Amino acid sequence: MMAQRADLTPFRGMKYYYPPDDAELVFKDGTARVSYGGLPIPLLDEDYETLDGEPSYDVVGRGIYQALRANPDCSFCERYAALLRDAYPHFLAELASNAIMLDGKDVEVPYLDRKINCLKVLALLEPENAGLPLEIGKTFLDRGLRLSALHLSTVSLYRAEHFLRRAVSFAPDDRNARRLLGEVCYLLGKYDDAAGLWRDIVAGSGAGDAGGLAGRLARIEEGRLPLIPTVDYLEAVGVAFSQFQAGDFEESLAILQDVVRDPVFREEFAAAEIHSVMGKCFTELGMPKYAEEEFREALRIDPEHEESRSRLAHLTA
Image (cartoon, rainbow, N blue to C red; front, side, top):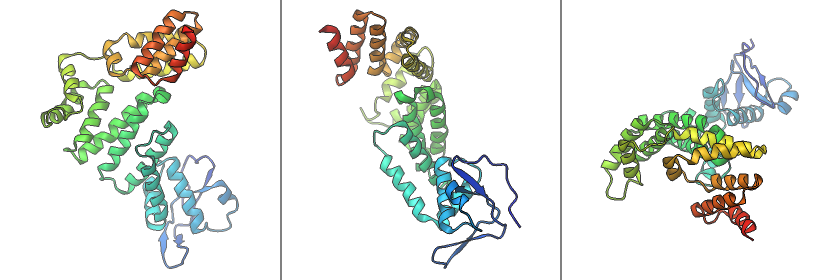
């Protein structure tokens, strides 16, 4: 009897195989079997096209491994992860190795996405391991602050909040999880939540041991806050960068000027790239004096910002 076909969205480059209800996966050495009957199995297109009967151990492993790496939130994800654990431990080891390899490295956004997916697969098998949602949330936070992905800031930061709240629920006394969750709440404009998370950390820290949280907590309590939630400014900067790339220099400049008028945002999230793009906009609009001011401000924030240095030298030559 064949498994009932579920209404599933196919993965790109893959097709589903529907095994009989009594199907068993036979390990390569023939000494062990795992039942996988009734479970729709994603297979790579090339493996599906050459299929003759039931797929082999290797074909099933390749399929579910690639499916989970592509979308660890897919239908049947828990069962696919369990099948990896029971029949393909080498794939789990590879996932963990990839996550570790990417940890702490200054990588581009696609690599952050890859790391998130690796960690999500591992979390399917250890749903109460506080360290996994902590790492996932931290990576989403990193993603939400990347200049190249500011158009995704809102989505990234809300995903960060989701996973960091899980981490705190599993380990309420984890100061790092509470600090990071407070950071995300602050960025989203949830200032009371941020203050509550940071207050205990500051109270339990020695002098200078709160990582600057005491000053930020004081600003919240005094009401010295951005005019709008920081995430909205980040999204606006992302739009401005897109407008610059599209050649709409006036619109890009207008957005960025509006953003940097907020003194709190300007102080807490000083970014040389914002002023560099403003300088390039002024240059394109034939306003070299203002362009020079912006390139100098970019270099004040980041003395190593080479593009601003080069453009300033060209303006003042």
